[in-house]
Amino acid sequence: MADAAPHPRQVFDLKGHEAAEIAFEEARGRGRLHHAWLLTGTEGVGKATFAFRAARRLLGAPPNAAYGVLGASPDHPVSRQIIARSHPDLMVLEKIGEDGKPRKLIPVDEARKLTDFFSKSPASAPHRVAIIDAADDLNVNAANAVLKTLEEPPPRGVILLVSHAPGGLLPTIKSRCRRLGFQPLPEDAVTAFVESRTTANAEDAIRLARMSKGAPGKALALALAGAVAVDDAAKEILLSLPNVDEGLALSLADRFRGAEGAAQFNLLLERLAERVHGHAMRLAAEGYGGLDRWAGAWETLQRLPREVEAVNLDRADAFFTALTELRAAARA
Picture 1 (cartoon, one colour):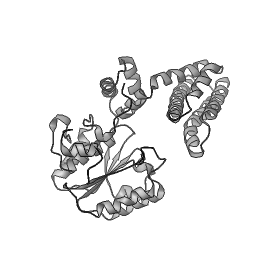
Picture 2: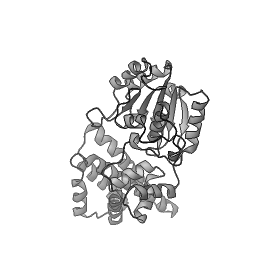
Picture 3: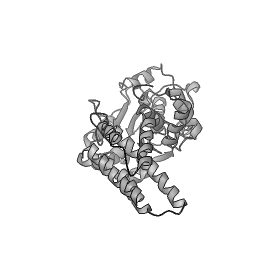
Picture 4: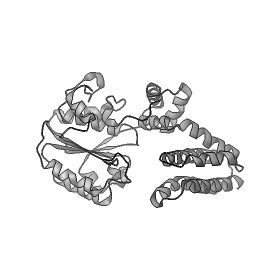
């Protein structure tokens, strides 16, 4: 498997979203291109990849049908500049800072750069383009700064806003955008995607596709994070309740240290929550009681990753808190 998933600026194919691409291309071709597009759908479904595909077209890369409706050749100068982050008419706002490290939110100072960016005429392209990935990551002041730009549409400027949870965006931002929805892909399509991009065997590819719930980008991220093994550990924990193996618990907690610890912690709790939900649904269907305890454990598994990040809790301690609730639910 690859060491890391490619950034959307490096991806040139996109399957399953032809309708969205046709709608965008038709608007562009008719000269009725809206100045702001809100791209909505679950995380990893392909919204950011679409945004960069649209940006290549807006910045002058000619169509290449081999790569789909909005396809462009990776070898075209526009594509090369975008990959190198050097195109003068493209601005990207994201949580990754200039130092390459992730931030919790996109700060207002970054969002305010839009005003200066759009105050200038395109340097070498038909348009100036800004991609916000994701609008959900804008802090309050940054969201207001983006709104100001949306309220004063820049000439020959286009803003592409990615959103995984548009319900949390300012209504005034949503009202100034044309919305394009991206639906989850069929399981077999995601399975084929995983098999083409990783060394996962057929069985694991199916499991990863199911875990991703139709989002190929998430399926790839799960594969690279070792999600099948993590899911196996989550299954082992639930099957052994209320007597979780101490060695297994300590081994899992040890993974939560260091730079990769947060991702492993979040992934394990996500897989535990998914399995707890499925277990509770089966109990309900069979008429068993004690569901309140399982519901409480599920809520804890959902809540803990946010709390750990917000107040810098120890991840191992949070994991053992979750285990305590799971044990209590199993004994109920």
